[in-house]
Image: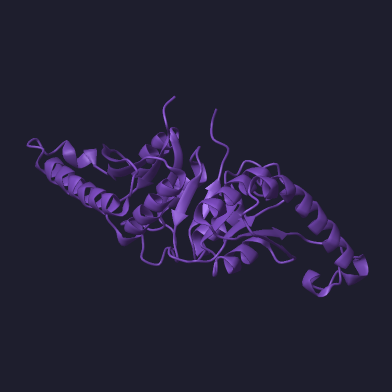
Length: 289
């Protein structure tokens, strides 16, 4: 059986350097090999006029230099893990999505070389995080925090997959886990104009907390050494998780939420986190069979 690897997509920017550092640590926690990949975005419309292939050779040399620096960075940081590198030719997002089919985890920086300086998330990172068949981590914000892992949990079937990944991450990194559940309580019609956070819903909160605690029991049993804090909030999931990211080392969420678009590959909370979180964001997906 072939061991899957953690793949980190790089482009030579500071953002991708942060992704390399994070991916090296994660590969160490999991005991998995690391594959460093750079996609050489070659414009074949230019190539057809370049009969000497001068532009291609220069571009390829630049791509190989990017990978060589990344390889050196990874090997200096890595201890006891295998590191290999690849230079691929093509458009970055489609090529990375192809590689994601055989990856245990895809790791990306939040910004690339293209686009506008004011964008919070690069187009390649967003497309891969939205469409990859494997779990994806987008490294952004603080990457050296000593805070907890935070898991955003709803009542969807994906909740157990999120908990499995979050408990494993907290266990591997030797840190506490915060399980955050956002829900809107049922409010009487005569209180319709009152904000949910201002209404006393102690009985509903107690029920929600008991249900969540029951869901956590199997994972507490599997990871008894992981301290767990349960947080219930009536705020929106995206806002609550973005706020939690200010003290977290990692946010773990599912790939789909309960939004109106059933076919969406990433829920609105996940998209908000990719743009606004102050720590790396782990988008969990069930790996393909």
